Structures are given as structure tokens and as C-alpha cells.
Image 1 (cartoon, helix red, strand yellow):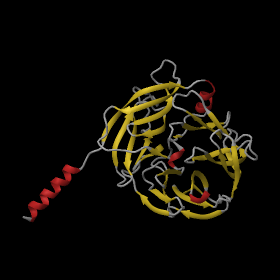
Image 2: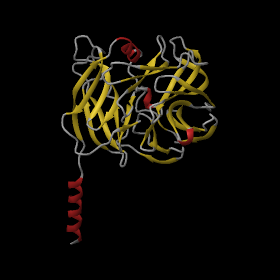
Image 3: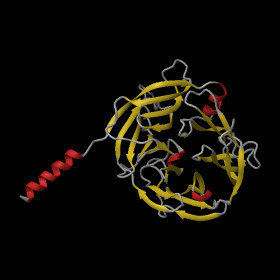
Image 4: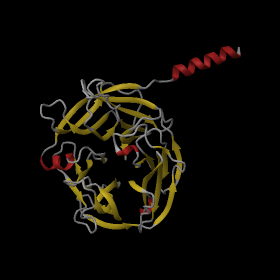
Length: 365
């Protein structure tokens, strides 16, 4: 009798497991970027973006002839206008760079920016000075410039989030012997360092190969959603570290399977959607030339933040586009229109061809 019950239990478990669905995205709307907005968003290539609750897109903008970001640009989905939040007129930041930014609930913008003392021959920042938290109102006016006492000893800051009580969280990393070590520093509202925590004291394998498709693979990000901050980098080998709005480490979440590398993470309710990096194409054995004979499939797996497993997977065939916004049954991308004779840059709104079995909530950054 026990054996029969055990068999029935296994059968019931197998029946209740819902396999992940592969859902192809269909473009529902396409809006061409034009004029100054196109120039601001496109120069330097696609960056990681986000959206506010009104659907406005926020994108970093790269300073001309440099790899440094000098502004955040806000614009609606129809690309009809834009507001620029620039650092170029601020003391010590005339040649500085933006590390990350955070949207306040009232729509105001906070930016983590760094003074650049030295650029390389190819205009990459290599030596930094002071660090600042900049506060902008919704019109782009600077309300304050706070000198942040960042401890950069064996620490490169890459992510930023607002904490309770006007305090701040800065996350980043250091590399050593093929491993990445993630570090979180919290600051008082005065800019004074409060705590410094090593999130993975033993380090985690940096990547599955010698090269990566995006710096996000080793750059830590801080995503804020439903009262929590999720600290992660673009690989499922590294756990997600969940931090409270008071700056306390609460738990970690291990995603699976391991060795999926990605960028553009967005949180939808209790799920995480990312843009997975496709495998690098192999060169022809006889010529050594890489020949692309068909469009590259881009997967966007959706992970449960409860189990860490993939629940469903969106996909499409535009490898030039970055994920800007995520909402239930709707995604927004910015990239090249690969179907056009002239590959213009555009805002794409897309949805899956069929509905998901599971419900989701709107995205939080």
C-alpha cells in the first residue's frame, strides 16, 4: 500500500509541474527616433535603460568622442520630446561620468557621478577623483550636489539605490584571480560612509569564457522593487543579494541554470526578466570568417524570485535592441530597425504572441 501511495504522489508531482513556455514576441508599435533625441540616445551604442510609472523612458547619454556618460535623457514612448539631465555644468564634473541613477517615487532623479581625472588615449576614464550624488527635479534642474565619501579601496562602484531616511546604497566589485567580489557601501544623508559589506567574501567565478558580451556580467546593479533592493550582476552563477531599504542584507536567491549571462535586468512583480547573451558565432573552419546566415535569436528568460528557476522565456530576432521597459504582457526596446532598408533607430513595443499561464505585475527598477 505504501508503494502505491508513493507512486501516486510522484505522478501528482509530475502533473503539477508547469514547463517553461517559449513565447515569441510580436512588434505592436514602432516609433522612429529623430533629430537631437536620436543623437543623444544612440551615440555610444545601446545602454541599459529604465522607465517610470508614467511610461517615460530614461536612457544614459554618452559624451561625444568619449565613453563617459554625461547625461540622462527622459522621453515618452512616442519620442515626441525629451528632457536632459546633464552633469556638464557642475563643479568637478565638466569632464566627469555617470555611474548609475535612481528614480524617486515623485519622479525626481538621483544620479551617482564621478570626477574623471585622466582619460586613456581612446577616451576611456581610467583615473577618478571625487564622487557625487546629484538630485534633479522633474524639469532637469539640479537641486543639490552631495560630496559622497566613497571608499574606493579595491572597489569600483557600478550601481546605486536610495535607502530610507535620505541614505544611499552604492554597490560595485573587484576582480581577483578570475573571481568577482561584490561589495555594498551605505551612506548617511550627509554623504558619510556608514557601512561596507562584502556580499560574497569568497568571490564567484567572473564569467564562463575569456570575454563577455556586456560589462553587466561583472558590474553589480541595484534594482529597487516592492520595498527591497536586489543586488545582482549579469550571470546566474552569482546569487542575487536582497537588501532592505535600511541597507541590511536579508537573503540571497540562486538563479538556475548556472552560466546564463545577461544584461538589462528588470523586475516584474515577483519575477526577473533579462536579456540573455546569445552564444558567440563560430568562424568557418576553412576561411576563419564568421558568416551570419540567419538572424540571431535573442532570448529573454523570466526567473521566479521565489524559486530562482525559469518560468517562461520570451524571444525575438533583433540583436541590436536593448530592453528598456517591462510590464505584464508588454516589453519596450530601443534599437535598430533591422527590417528597414536603412537601419534607423526606433522604439519598439512588443508583446508575446500568446498569453502566459502565470500572472505578473508591473516592473520596478
